[in-house]
Structure formats: structure tokens, C-alpha cells
Length: 98
Image (cartoon, rainbow, N blue to C red; front, side, top):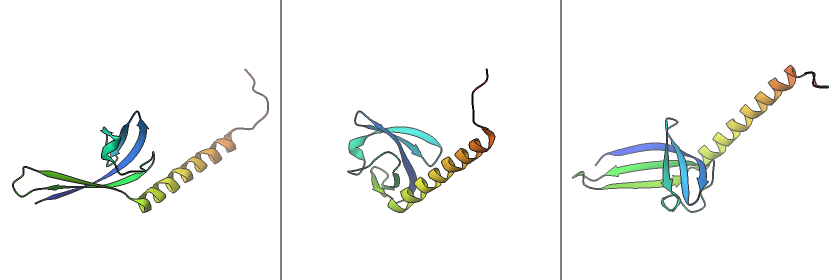
């Protein structure tokens, strides 16, 4: 039996479907019912695929990784704040001149 691990990030949820970024590489769409209850946009999911010894069965275990979600949201907030500060330095304020 071999195991494969992936990191999924829930990008959007619409009409009982979730858009998920897989390992920061590609996007897939999965039925919301296949994900853990309570999953929300921005959640990081730890996914393990286990193959049976005969290769005829795959089992997916999908769980919300709370620690990774907290870390990812903090990194995103820091990036937004950094961009906001850089933008404020370049914008002198005042009236717009066309």
C-alpha cells in the first residue's frame, strides 16, 4: 500500500461545489459533500490518498488542518498589509488631476 499526501486550499464554494487549489499548483472542483463538514473558503486541508495493495481501491482522508489554515490566513493578512503600506507611500493624497 502506498500513501500520497497533498495540501488543498479551498478557494471558493458555490452551489455545493468547492474550487480547491492542490499543492499550490493546479485547481480542481470537488463536490462540497466530499469535504469535511464546516469547511469554508480559505481552509487548508490535509489530504492523504491510500492505495490498496492490489491497486484496485483508493481511500481519501480529508481533514481541516487548523494550524496550517491559521498560518496561511496570517501570511495573507501580512501580505495585504504590506501592499497597503507600499501603496500609501506612493499616494500623496489630495485631489485627482486628469
